[in-house]
Amino acid sequence: MNRTLQMTRYLLGLPFTLLLFVMCYSLYKGLVQEYDDLQQQKQQKERASYQKVLSELIAKRQKKNKVE
Image 1 (cartoon, rainbow, N blue to C red):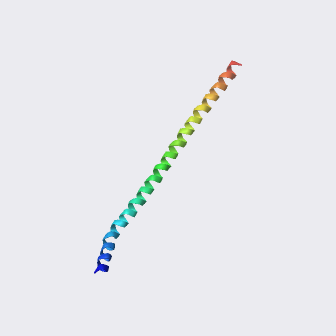
Image 2: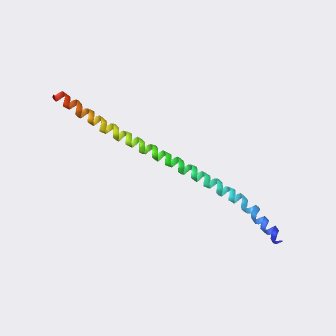
Image 3: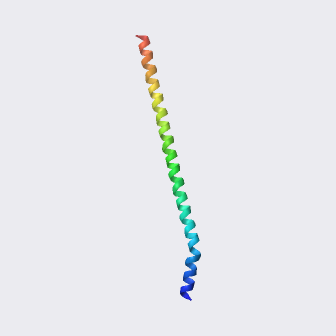
């Protein structure tokens, strides 16, 4: 009887275990996607910052060339 009870517990716990694995996998995929999105946003901000600095340098250079 003890063995039957033990097998019943395993069989009843198996669906919950599978559900937990699926939930963990979904959480992992979501976190990876969010990290990728944050990295992409960071790169876009850096590009925008570089473009701003570059355009300011070009504008200063053109202004300096006009004065000369």
